[in-house]
Image 1 (cartoon, rainbow, N blue to C red):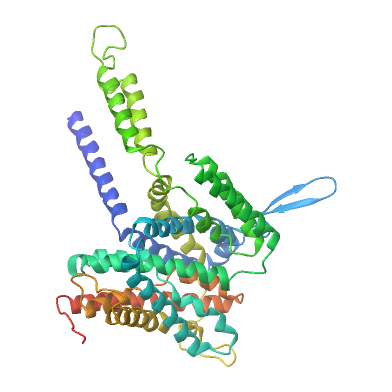
Image 2 (cartoon, rainbow, N blue to C red):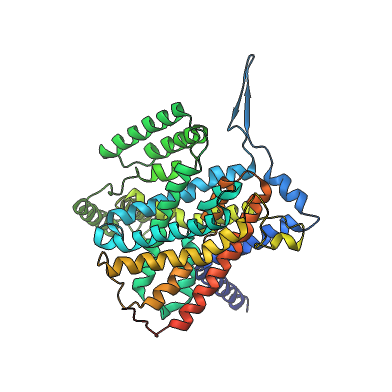
Length: 466
């Protein structure tokens, strides 16, 4: 009876572990966790017994102060928990985005002009149109600087929704949206770098450039050990932090310098693996010398298995290894932390949720962001794609219809993570920032709903445009 109970307990725990593993491996899981964190942040910011504690925690000072007899040094200056998440932890997010962009440029959907032209032009249209829509509501006001907010696409949500819709969307359009979102991320990074930086401290920037040049030389010399890239990455982050360029962009810059080539060649890997396999087969099965064959794996077996594992790992390029290793942490730790720190908008009254409010002199942030995401983004993606195909600059994705492309383009209006990030850079006024966040949440939800409904409606109903 006891053995049966232990077996049942072990089996139930194993099944629970498999279910958890299936959840975390699902493409839509990150979106679910992110939405949950948004809801938690909104509750923490608005419940009377948690709002003050929530704000105090985010404003906790984390700067290090070093004193001597004459001077004091503060590093990083002005660092709070909220700033640590936005300027520090989010570097990992941008670093992973940089690795994805590099992979797509080197050997993916952006590796050739024929492959890249459609998603790149669609991404450009999907950034230009929402910026124009936003400026239609805010031109000539102090909120005009927020034009970059509705130009971004959140790849995690968009791909997650496509995955939940299954085979209703052609695989070619899923690839198209993925490539578009990556090109869109590159565009958003350039927008942040050129339009939402502070006063440039050229000295820090020059030192950072010198450090990155050294890393580039190390890469060209064939160095594949991670420590030679990790330490300079931390130094470059600090230099970017004080240079006036947003510090998270250091993650993208360093990602471009990470080697993609493996440490070992294919021939060396095969030769070494055969040698280790032979040693493993010949490993002494009786290490204790008692005439009893030890079970596999014994200590000697484990030694060769560790060597084989290390060889397999280093035979994959560092860039691929880092992207694979960091992706779960970005999806289930970095982005949820960002949501917890930034989605907590205090709503003093229901009037605060009125995104159609427009005040004299301050424009209409809510309408600009909402309609930029819901209308501007899909319209820009669709029209740019249509023009590219009709002008024979690109070809239509396989098995795709114009109706389905329009539906998928609507999912491009899910801004969320990158849009909230740009919103925090575009304004300094807390009320404006919060108005932008509310519009981002409402616009992204509306785009997700409209896109999903259109996909269900247009499934297997092609539209021919002559």
